[in-house]
Length: 168
Image (cartoon, rainbow, N blue to C red):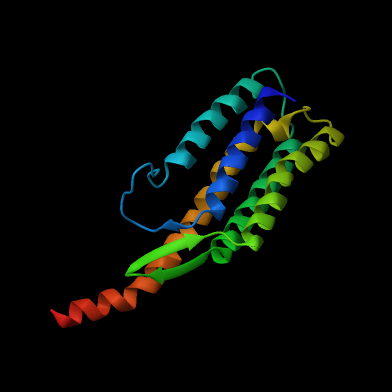
């Protein structure tokens, strides 16, 4: 197993673990990660890995098209996961937790860059491209899911906030 794949799978395991945890939305508890930190770390490390990988390899048009298609489907799966996460209110706080559907969508999604790697190789592209882009894929996937969740939370809270402003 290459270092890129090992790092990508470790990041994936961490993301999957966080998905199924019951977590409050908003506020800053002990040991919490700020919004966007995970995606930024994945993006930075993923960009470095891809730059290092691409330095000695050529990505043809077919390879780039396959990677773009993989990322586009990954973004769509991020939207689906954003709607699959359970949101609820308890004791005046909003909570979130991934469901079995969220987990299945993550499992399918992480297979995309790795399956795309096989297609890239068949198209004459560099071996290992899927592994080299895995962290970038995860950064995109978690960012899209987070944006959908934020929109859902705002939609849940907007009637409450509107009622509060009318009470003033």
